[in-house]
Amino acid sequence: MIIEGKQKIWADYQKDIPNDHYFYVRSCIRQAFWPGSEVTFLDITRNKLGKDFYENPYHTTCGGIAYHSDTIPQETAMTIIARQFALMHESGYENYVCSCITSFGCYTETLETWHEYPELEAIIRQYLWDSCKKEFAKPKYLAHASDLIYKFRFDIAKQMKFPLVNVKTGKPLKVVEHIGCHYSKMFPSKGFGGAEYPHVLVGMIEAWGGEVVDYPERRHCCGFGFRQYFVQANRGYSESNTHKKFESMEPYEPDLIITNCPGCPYFLDRWQYVIAEQTGKTYGKNGYGIPALTYEEVAGLVMGYDPWDLGLQMHQVAIEPLLEKMGIPYDPKKKYQGLNGKDLGQPMCPSCIKSV
Amino acid sequence: MDFGFCLSPSSHVKMDNVDLTTFNRLKETNPDINTCIACGSCTATCTAGHFTEMSFRRLLLMLQRGKEDEAKKMIQRCMLCGKCTLVCSRGINIRKILLDITR
Figure 1 (cartoon, chains in turn green, orange):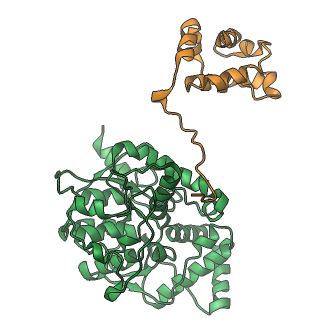
Figure 2 (spheres, chains in turn yellow, blue; figure 1 turned 180 degrees about the vertical axis):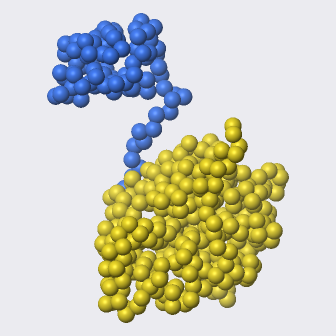
Figure 3 (cartoon, helix red, strand yellow; figure 1 turned 120 degrees about the vertical axis):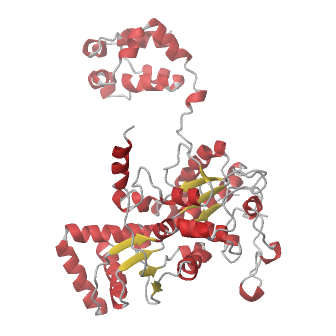
């Protein structure tokens, strides 16, 4: 093997990410699914790493969920995105970072479309002015939030309290990494490692002491795909994709799944419950499932955040076996307590998959 | 519990569990089967293939994946005209192979 040649090829897959000063936009569905993730991201970047991440309360959804469901045309989605860029410009920022993978795909698609068809950009400028009386500037740099955690992974490792290591055996945890399709499959050059060797989550796992699981269906989609999930009768197709992945990863006995997309952790988590109810099969040990977490939740865990402050009680698959493997202390009584000890109510227990 | 949907049957082929008895027997009696390059000439010229799902190229793949029952069902469409043998770029006696599969 010629190492120099390999390094040159690998260099094409790298991104030079600005170090600081970002305009941050949230995800509409992540706030509902994993409410602790975005708060944790902002806390880590602002307070633990001392970076400038600004959030404008007037920003909205990127429109991606409607666009990918064929509810709105691309021009409408681009006008929504243009408004977001206008807010960034008004706030005095040039680097744009989004929490959602679908948003990242939509922003990238929009910027590429405007690059290829400048006349369309001019039309969108007019639409934005007519509707909001705003003008926008395109961001100098567009990043996904996982790019930033990847960039700062060694800084996070320096503050790490609980590495991805099984405290009972001393061995690294076996971690499955799952990249959202819209991160690097649409525009491979925009993601770390491209579509074939996406390194964004692998880098985090290795920096934090875990061992990456390489299994046959590693790059298979989780099955979300918008349309096949939104129509109830089609959900079997979505579920079958997840089922295929779990059947493939099962022999490797993973301890944890880490994802960087809003939909992937949701479906990799919830479908485990549905598959267990339909087939009686669970993929973790002793009747438990395999926890599927966001990269912010994993970063928070290794940095010593309280699991319930991270919102890990929002997961269908019980998180306690993983916490015990990593040696993270937790109070079971606080699992379903909100802020100021408010009782959030306890969900019903599933019949097949263990929840506590 | 009825969710209103269910798992789709998987088309995944686990090669570790595949029974290749028929295919291995064919390879012994017809060693030229190994020279097939899957060009598809046999399928393109197949008389039955224009009207039915008969395809020797697919049939060979079925046998390599242990789907013997499906292969035998497909072979019933063959009229044994022998055009596939005439056009085979590797000179494989496809007609004989088709006959051997059913023996």
